[in-house]
Length: 179
Image 1 (cartoon, rainbow, N blue to C red):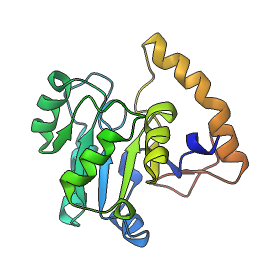
Image 2: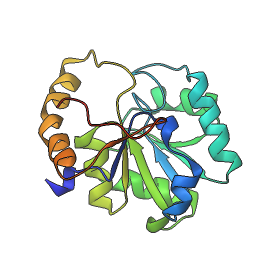
Image 3: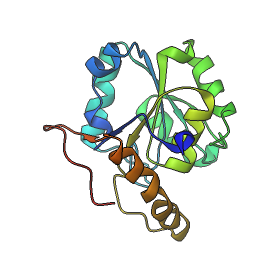
Image 4: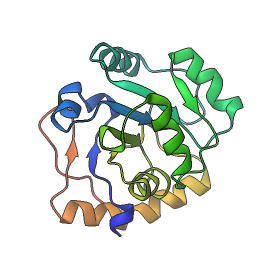
């Protein structure tokens, strides 16, 4: 189970702050797209996430996208938000994460992955040996395969919460959601 366990769970990507990263020696983030930066399949960036990206850039945090999607999905979105990207990463394989990290010119101890799925993002980051900042999905999943994965994630998250993990949010840290 530890390979599937997130390092920290956040309510949304916008709850991750430059101060949080700096306190942990993190200078760079590898970002998932669907249900992390935007709704699944969307090319639109929510205004609060756009502001968050600007805040991270202003703080000197290096950012790049690493997605399992094909370039036809990822490239237009990455261009729209002004980020470099790695498409078809095949997470949980760590090879796409390694490409993304190397492109940013940082060491493994300086980078974390931000994503919303246990079996791709958390497992991939843990296999690669970097922290995973798991965010709760932005929207409810409509695809049957992702809904199945979400059901399978519940025991993993329950274990995280049982060991004292919590959801970090804008307000005071909250209790975990019902698993």
